[in-house]
Image 1 (cartoon, rainbow, N blue to C red):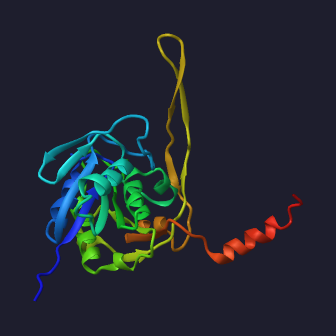
Image 2 (cartoon, rainbow, N blue to C red):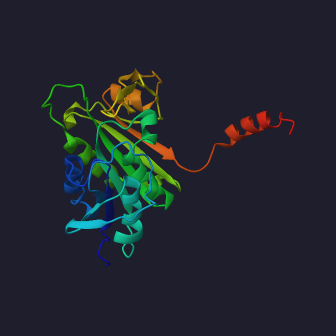
Length: 263
């Protein structure tokens, strides 16, 4: 009888290679597979799907199978696939565990989601995972990455990710609570969050103006079945994201509009 093949897992993130979330994820996934980590050497949150094309990238081996990269999360995903694991391609890429939610339109800003999305571009099954931490909570509140880590391990063991179509991924958001306080698990759609979108205008010592993009989270739109609603109700949210393709009925609608243009 042939020996059982060990799953090969590439882990990335955007909080940096030394972040507690990625360490918790690595520790848990090492129980079910061979794990390689390629993550930014410094925090790269909210950098979206940035790829470094205008200057060289460097990779530093921190310990066995753990590599820090000078670039962005998407760089880490690409370098992990095309360089670090080029002779031993991963079966799965898991990006996280992010410190804070990646819900609604925030997935387009997220470096964590971008690293997983980069893997999906190469038709590698991919999952991004975040712990939904309330940054307004009192200082010293516990960050329970172990709950998200254990859930992702169980998710992988069920092989649900293998049902993903080509060029797709899963985005997971886990409440910052212990396992027994999770209400349930919900398949959810992308919702919408509201921010104040404040721009702070200041002046430096040379009298030159500069700006800080700020803004305060002001709540989410109540959309039944959305990722925001699922997490608010105490559930783990699992959102399938189709990267390529558009529903044919939607294309028919837009074509009917385009046909009205006299051009």
